Image (cartoon, rainbow, N blue to C red; front, top):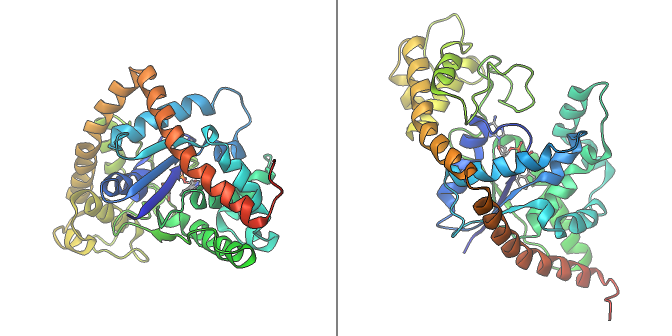
Length: 329
Ligand code: TYM
């Protein structure tokens, strides 16, 4: 059975890009695959400088993952810091990736530039090594992510192949999987930039927990262009194409078919907003229910941590054995 692994950071509220680019596909894939999904709280430390923030976000994100439909009986949902093997293999990965490779990662360059005068941690730079550990620990065949994570999966493949050639066959070399529609949802106010938790303005971001009226308002105010033609063309018409693609992702149609059924921007904005509201309303109900039972959430995360550790500890041991570290007799 195909093993799938993908993770999300507990930084800020989950948005429509996370949902259409990743979470929805985790849910649809969980019954055909052996699915592992992590809330990567240690990754969030690369940009955390206050106490008491990451823990509550982690719990809220766990409720969100179950609310979108991950079934704890089927998929393994765990918190990264509950599985210490991530940090342990992370170090091995740091020793298997080069400084030059890390320097070429576009996310590091973007994030470091955005932080400007802020503290840029070494962890932000070595982040892809920890992400490689997340993936390789689980012998994942596939990593379902949004387009922005492609480079991270590619570097993971390079690291896995390098390690295997140095120390013998140890890791499964994973492949990236992105959705047909929704792999890069862009900001409704700035349609050439991806919808991102770290955007400066909230007007262009649709949060999973936004009220219906707020969602509709954001869609009605979405930036388009002045030529008045509905066409799917990301390069020439980023705003309109984003709305078309969101509607396509919600309805299961192709972006070209969606574009062909509209002649005006108003109805397109309205229908995209409506489709998103219909998709998110049941998720919001389930989220509130789940957040009302913290003990159950903790129990589910314990079950997930135990299942994750059973796999991760075997891979870590295999890694140490293949390197030839001295065992403790
Ligand atoms: P994160 O937490 O930023 O995002 C989680 C998932 O959401 C996708 N995504 C998007 N998809 C489409 N359009 C968007 N605007 C959009 N924004 C985010 C991301 O591609 C991702 O799939 N480094 C990762 C977390 C991570 C990880 C891993 C992922 C750590 N270890 C191992 C996969 C496997 C990140 O920061 O994702």
